[in-house]
Length: 366
Image (tube, rainbow, N blue to C red):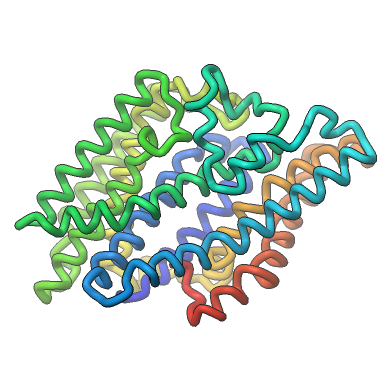
């Protein structure tokens, strides 16, 4: 599979935007849709790996091992650090006075923290139960990724059994987007996989298209018309939704999930993302994509997973510390929190994520 460095640059850009959004920077407070770009890239890259290696001996064992070594080390290091911190804080302050280890921690450990919304009526991530750590609330998306990894081989292996896999993939994608949109319109949270499968399914569809072109020896330029169609269709739909319907802000929590901008916007961003990953694959190395190959951006992309895991714990603790011990203005707080988020991410990446990937013989993010 040809490496597309622009994907790494895109990850670096999006991870920076997510950190800025969680720091409540006004201009980027509505970029929740960037998660669907990540989901689409996951569907695309994982789909390509499965389609390329499915017939090789021991494929499922290698696939499981690569997923485990990619996700688990940094995740469990962050989880362990947060639990130690939580026990320590409860001894010296009332900051986590109502927190007690329970079902929430158990679900965090097995990547099922997003299933609580099914188990407890009225549960929302805006009002985490006492046995959840508030600075791990964002890991619902990691749980979604893990659950997708379990389903992905089965999905791809079924699709390739079709006489025309691209038709099977298109039908599967349309069905998944329709079901996810219907569930969100009925009030189901986007934190559960069935209601947030749009991006993953569009990514798998894009992977099938690219695999077909490479299998028959065609250049990827053959997918460009389809890529532009998805890119423009999804992009225009998303922009119109954001222009006509007030998009939800991060701090609105559960109430934001009922917004039409979310219900329909997730599908729009997913379609846009499918076009984006196809365009980056077809045009990789093009001079117009130089910015996405900028070395600092590639570096941010390589540690984007560590950045995502650690930035909320850093922001959460510093919000408390800087308000109670060192009152500062909003700009002063930002000037401290923003670099520390990436500093902590770099430490996690260097001490945990990168060594594990080097041990498995790869520094690539897939």
